[in-house]
Length: 228
Image 1 (cartoon, rainbow, N blue to C red):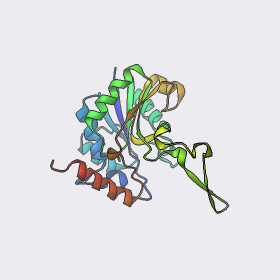
Image 2 (cartoon, helix red, strand yellow):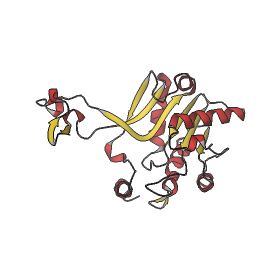
Image 3 (spheres, one colour):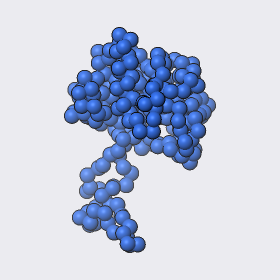
Image 4 (cartoon, rainbow, N blue to C red):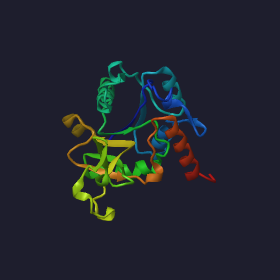
């Protein structure tokens, strides 16, 4: 089976300028995803989908392919990750290349490792898709809402349920999706009929949407890699 890693890295970033290539603990943050994909030896090709020449140059410097630039339609604020993946697969087909599965890797995932990608890839043999997830640190069933200035349980049926008795709930942790191409194209979604989880530990996950998030991620990374 031919496998491709697709790292989605458009140029537009409003809250953190040049977010996808900003230096993170000594090198552009996108480099971590590229290096993890290459070191895993899982993929026949590791490519970056971008609309910015500067990102293209840095991606190629770290060993990724950028065989074509992303279209303006797939670079808009309204384009979904699935839209980007469909365009990449279509553009490769025009070059005479087809793949059986893909991994969509995010460019701001410095905690990603080759080991994680190898483990997740092995799960795809018996599934349509693999999704990296992390458990909510506090059970959402115990959430409050504020209505008419007052605090209420959002789910009052769980008011007296012990936290340890509640079903664990998970969320996408922004590391990667892996999908079989035929199933993805048929259902036009990254969450497919048989999608299995790859559960990440909380200390290896950090949303990076603001500069405060960025600083927290760097601090966590330094702790994890202390002494290396």
